[in-house]
Image 1 (cartoon, rainbow, N blue to C red):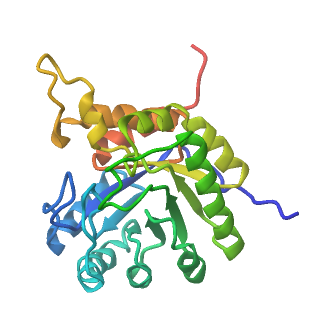
Image 2 (spheres, helix red, strand yellow; image 1 turned 45 degrees about the vertical axis):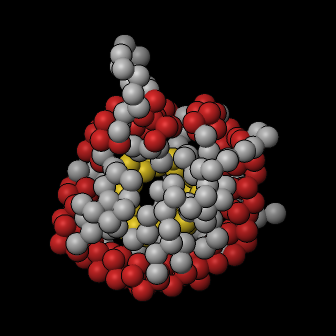
Length: 276
């Protein structure tokens, strides 16, 4: 039996910066819809320490509608091309044609919420992030349901990773899909039992990526006297707390909007334990 070798771990967990070149993403939609603004933001995140900049041209927020392939290509490819010389770039897409065009422009990682693009990753010789999602962005939050959410997510991701390994993909990340077809309770359970996924992924030679940044379920925490949920622009503290938790549980990468603060936190998480 061939043994799968896990790539050497970096000095700290990796930080993937979110760069949505869309008009309708839930937090930064419209801020970086123009090429010049998107490229400037990508370079800023690289300067802040982002290990990967994740360029996405189609919103996957709850209720989002699909984007035409030609429009997604128009949004994504020029930005990837401009950034690829200075930072590792991933493309956040579910479309094979967009994935191929982005890789041709310099992307080396496919961030795939559909967990279906491993044949493309194998064909192109690039890395692949497989995410779990119940349903589609348009309907995933209508009535999410599971028996054991952790066990079901883990089984799904390991099955997809096995298929990708057999196809020849050498770099595979597993993402439990926080907020993608999950209630707040499901999200918290997945985070609380994240170590189980990390161990299972590690045994197969893979790593785990987690994205909680600014997501809706975080708005319920620390709401103050009026008990109103916090909007996306008031969820930094909760985003950092969950990113640190994920890293402490063994996640190898976190996907975030707030790169500078998260890189600093990741550096602390990555410090060796020393006796006083």
